[in-house]
Image 1 (tube, helix red, strand yellow):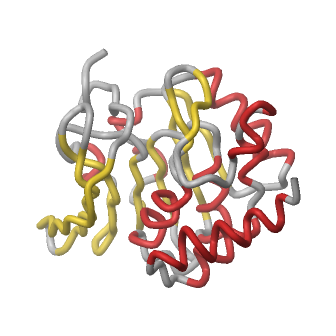
Image 2 (tube, rainbow, N blue to C red):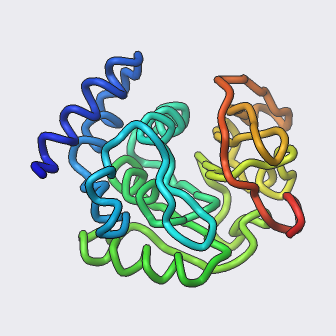
Image 3 (cartoon, rainbow, N blue to C red):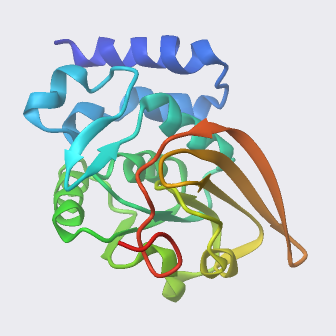
Length: 213
């Protein structure tokens, strides 16, 4: 397969064709080799319009959802970003292209180690990974100007809101364990403004302030 052509088609049809407009996000999606973040068996489907399994009961999100969530973060390039749910590392790679510093937490050590290996091979030096309960955030490096949660939560964990800077944006799927609504939460003067974006389906956010095992 010509992966370069596959990426171009993915961007033009699945992303730009559905109204996504942030050129920095679209450029990152076109540059980053999504097929490197899936298994050899899944490479042929890496640029298809659907999520793919990555093992351990987790998935790499549909390209459109990755791009949409990233666009909702409104990144300009100087931000410190926290990601909850490293998974295979693809979203972290996108963020690494668009922000100054990326901190990413994954509760499954096997996935985190694999993501670390791939990100290193691809030369991303501004991503720091951690294994742990993502619902607790990563207070050591807070506050963050932007925060993304790549699993469905019953609500927005207060722990994560507390680690957002003034004016910071959080993108998070909120709802039941089988379907959610994508929400953008913005912190202004101690209050939280919420905006619903669309329906979505993510694996559950497991942790002390999310879903229990």
